[in-house]
Amino acid sequence: MTNKQPIRDIKIEELRKNCFRQSKVPGEFMFQMRVPGGTTDAKHLLLVHELAEKYGNGTFHFGTRQTFNIPGIKYENISKVNERVEEYIKAIEVERCGLDLDVDNLGYPCLAPRNISGCVGADHCIKANAKVPALANKIEKIIFPSNYHIKVNIAGCPNDCIKAHMSDFGIIGITEPQYDPSRCVGCEGCLRACKSHSTDALTFKNGIITRNKNLCVGCGECVEACPTRAFTRSKENFYRVLIGGRTSKKSPRIGKVFVDFVTEEVLLNILRNWEAFSAHVLKGSPRYLHGGHLMDMAGYKVFKEWMLKDIVLNPEAKVADRVNWVENEYRSNYNVK
Image (cartoon, rainbow, N blue to C red; front, side):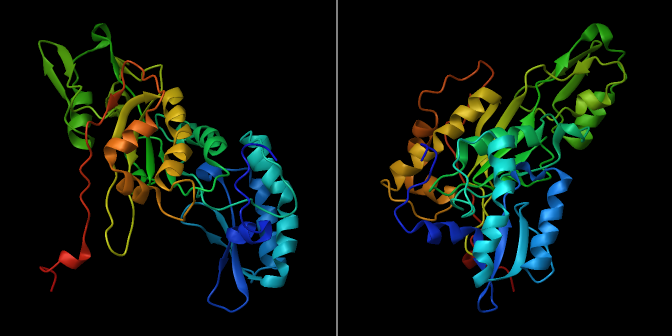
C-alpha cells in the first residue's frame, strides 16, 4: 500500500461499498463514478451506458456533484460493477490525475472526499480566468483518497456558475487586470461593463482609468470590454478561496472569503493541509462530517493556523482576519406565514 491509501480500520469490502448509495427499493443501489472537474473523455460514456443497461435499471443521472450516477444496481451485482470500473479508475485517477494509488477490481477505496465539481473553464468560456479541468486534476491528486470528508467546487470566474459559494472549499479563478494607458482611447467601455456586471471599481479622470483594488473582484469584465487591449489579464493566474458554504435543512449558509489573489502553488499547498487539520479536529478518528462543520468545531483562528501552516504566500495574497458566517436559520423565520 502507498501512503495515499486510506485507513483500513474496517473490512475493505464494506469501506469500498461507500461508492454505492442505497436505494428506497430494497436490495438496490446507485453507483457513483468520479469525474474530477466535471469534464472527461466522451469514450467513457460507453461504459456508463453498459453499466446502466446491464446492471442498473436502464436510467442514468447526472449527479449534483457531476458524478456519473447509475441507479438500480442489485446488491449481488456490486462486485461485477467494481470489476468493470477498474480500468476507468486507472484511466481517471492514475493516468489523468497522477494519483499514487493501488487500483484493483474492488472499486473505489473510499467516498469521503466528494467529487470535485467544476465549470467548463477557460478551455471554452470567454469569461473564465482559469482552466478548471486541469486544476481539478491537480486537486484530485491531493484530496483523494482520504478518510476525511471534503467538498470542492471550482469556478472559472466570479460569475460562479458552479456555486462555489455553497461548498466547503469554493475556488474561483480571478485575474489582476493590467492597464496600459498608452492604449486607452477613453471609450469608457470598461467602466460601463464594471458598473453593469461587476462592482463598479473603475473611475475615469483626466484620460486615465483608475481601478479601486479594494472593490475589484478580479472578474476580467474590463478586459472583455476593452476594444484596444488597454486592459489585459495578468500573466499569473490567481484564485479566491471561499470556505464553509453549505446547503442544509437546518442552517444553510454562503461561503466567505478565506484567501484572495493567491497563486496556484499557494492554493494547492493550502489544500495539502486539509487532511492534517481534519485529523487534528477529529483526533485522528474520521467521521463523516462536512468540512464546514469541522471549521465550526475548530473555530476560524485554529482553522487558519492549520491551513496556512508552512505556507509562503505570494505578494499579492490577502488573508481574511476573521470570518463572520451568516446562517439562514429556518426556525427563526417567524415572518414567514
